[in-house]
Length: 265
Image: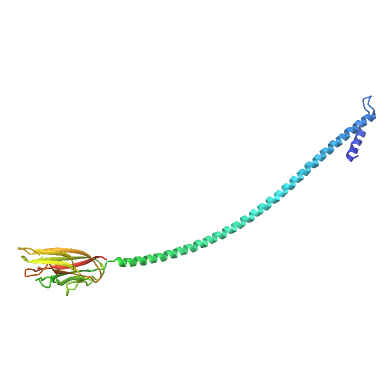
């Protein structure tokens, strides 16, 4: 019999007393007490087993909690390690980006300076090309007042000759540079005389005029705009000559003259 049962029997024996019921014997009483003790032992063993089962379950739960706690710690440690590696990588990347930005900025500044220098050089080149050189002339006083057919009019007094395009020897203007030119011809004739003049480019007539008045001297102006290549020539010539074909000049304002200017190149 177990220690617990012995203890219970001892307690029962100590506190037992004669039954009050006359019909019940001492044996019956002890038997009932024993039966009650046995039931109590079975109940206690059941409770003990249940407690052991609960204790085992609790131990298993604690074990699982401990294992889960260890896994959580391991996960946290892994995350902390990843975080530290990520921070180190971020610092490295930031440094690399800063170095790259600095290098890129220096390259951009260098390229910009080079481009600016090239642009300035190109602009200066274009500016030089766009700058219109000063080319102009004005001459008057024909070498002869009598006109003959096909005669080139030579204006002997040269007021201005920027670019040295006009020749007072030949009466012809030779373009020193390519460009668009404006030519002016002012012609005066005495009364009862004719003048048939033309502005000519390389032998091709650009504009022609006719002058005559029976009673008065007359003056008129003619203009021609023409694109010339460097080296091409322009002059004034008479298209018809004769005894009554004459030019007139009265200083200082009635000038029979020839002039021109470069207006665009």
